Image 1 (cartoon, rainbow, N blue to C red):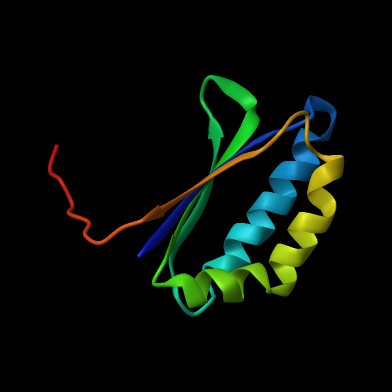
Image 2: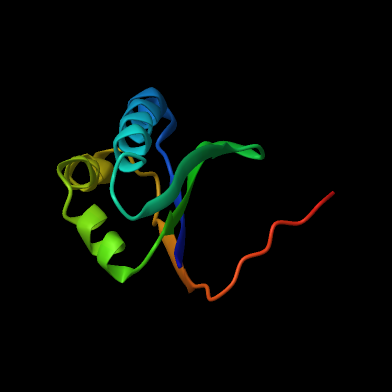
Length: 101
């Protein structure tokens, strides 16, 4: 499994636009083959920071996502929404276990 964690600092004046774009991206991405889970959340300590948590079955699913129309739209519009440099981390996961609290 491939896991991506992406963090985007958003220009406060463009926050609503960024949230609308992120909502559309999440909705469409979760319909893709090979996507295990795709979520976006607003950071509780910085409302102008959006974090994406993405899980894919394999590298082919990541590539298909990156070539999708909705992701291309997101990439095209993103530079006008940013207030800094994004950070994207990729994890290759061989095993995942659900934990009880």
